[in-house]
Image 1 (cartoon, helix red, strand yellow):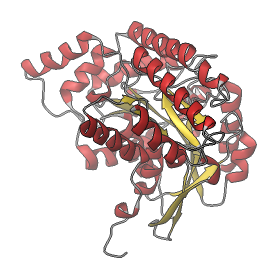
Image 2 (cartoon, helix red, strand yellow):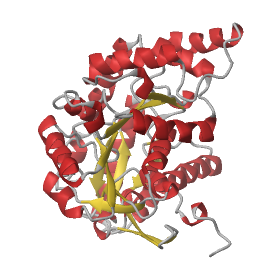
Image 3 (cartoon, helix red, strand yellow):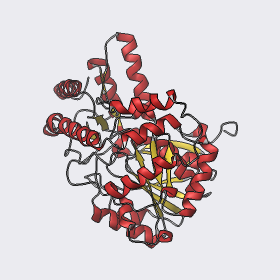
Length: 413
């Protein structure tokens, strides 16, 4: 064990495993797999975004920027945050990052102290757990209700003397749950009561289908800077389909937090890609594209997912995001078996959600000793509905056919 680094003890993401399984299936059969296991949109970035990158390269605008990112982009982001999210913040508190994933990892590193706990939702994006462990946080988990939403009371009960921060993801991956302003305000009250930091992952901010998105830090708008405790992360990958560009940003609540984040960014990457930052500047002018893209994913949800609800696989349509969590308990007691059978029989990829509910046992040095899923997650499956409408419809049809076959055979393939 001592020969293995702490990172070497952290389990790989189930998403990585499912992605590789689909790739192997395509190579073995020569047939395409309908990839409902991965959140890759079928719409593309605005054409002017690619042109902005090319123009930056052609004109030699490729030098280093500061660790925070280009002043012009951070100033534009401050305006966007004020107009769209209700944040009132300084560009000095904003950090441009190579994707919100790196921003989240850096943010956790900037907050963690030895022995601290980070509270995660019991169903969480697997990368959140990896980032937590890499930062040196001890992971702990707060409960979700039948609708996959947390409550302030549940979070309060999960807080221990070691708890340093809470991670909130709304709209959520994998559940699609959305927290309204009242729910967020109640959670903020718990954080203030227990002197906790909050990390708000808002990658899916534009993808809210029932109600409106409330940006968590907007609830601190009227507070003096030194009393604020919410750090927020955002992404260009979802709203503008810039997945491979790797561009996001972090908003810190005050100068001390920004100073700590700056050190992590300097040590991690020196500065974000300059041509991609020019793409971000251009993308911020494409608000209409974000609105159109959200409408496309909502149309996918409204067309394809009701059949899954009617079949008893889905309790309710997700309020937001790109994903739905299905429960296959009625036809299979192991989601991994179900997913493997669907891939082999019908060339459809889904992600077993047990990997979204790991409960690591860690040592005092935060080395992962074991990581078993919560028992209730063993029959859950995540489906992505952000892809090509025709492929989604075909994939759902095959999923329903496979489900019916298992039901007819008493739960066997």
